[in-house]
Image (cartoon, rainbow, N blue to C red):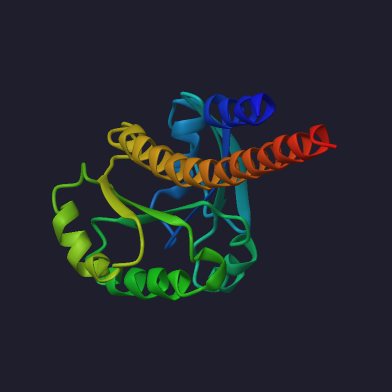
Length: 213
């Protein structure tokens, strides 16, 4: 029983590792976001052909973030990164009104994949520093986020170059993933505690029977 509680304590308070997939159309700002989070500075980027992967440390969380290129010819490759993904970051160029419908279609196509069934969704409404950028409410409507009734989702206004909104988004993401992991851990520990209880009860009963002979 004590060992079970020790395992529970360890699961609840140990440093947590999370696998995050970051996708979006090309030029949405994904790579700029990744290295702003990783290095705390702006880096010169070129279109990502393939992927970048980095570990981002934040509070008690270690995020493994996969930044996958968003050009239309390589989007079919996104599915190869879905396995074991706990959180999906979808980055939208809030200033690109011409392609927001395309972004919506790609997002919903991904969310229909079975491997992403349990992944929580964080939308970064990026490039909010631009004067004609759509706000978070408009992006929510354009992406059809309110139709995702079976999915934990959140939209965060961001500016990748200044870092505004990025850590607020990570807070939401880490809290929601941690809550899901914690619920699974508690369920598993409750099972073990229950099993230990019934085993001990059986042994006590068996000892009483033996004492009568």
